[in-house]
Length: 242
Image (cartoon, rainbow, N blue to C red; front, side):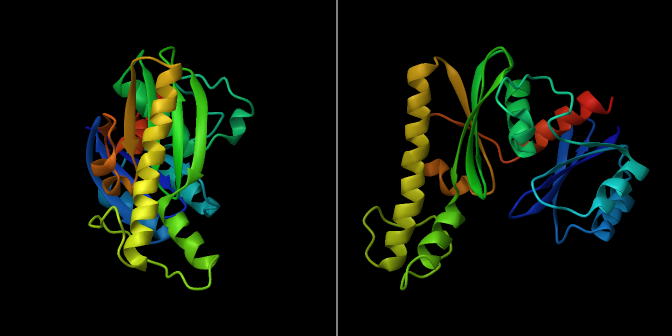
């Protein structure tokens, strides 16, 4: 079976998923975006194909290295996609958002899908049953909210997210945890309910590094998959690198 490396360079983490055939094998976290890090993965897995989704300014040598050793594709607005993007300025759509909606359409074809990514920001991405990516919305992510309250006040501390906290905070830390995590959960539920007024019978897909903090607090039925963006990248790679 052919091996494909799917790279996701986000604002917080640099990740790579290894696929054998169409099966997700494992995820690797890169320490940095350098040619040596990419070369180590190439030497370890001997990939036939690769794809890169990047929302950062990564070194150009990475793309050259992948193109030298694999059938490489860089995801962008000019990529061939199994969906359409009838939105204004498609060149401004983040590559990560394209991967999410392609994954949703691949998993639930010809159905309405709302794919929600929980990373540096929350992205809401809606693709209809005609495989048209209609757009969505973006709001601050969990750690961005924690940092904003710390950096824009004199006394509030910067805290780390935790899963165990009360609704009614009893000190500064638990007040911040309740406000951010439960507040975001209510936001997500509210957005889902707003979509339900406009669209009937749609799937809700949730993914992202912060997903685990919110799943227990959401009242709406969701399909949670931490590897959703990678599955979208693999599908796009197959579409462009066949």
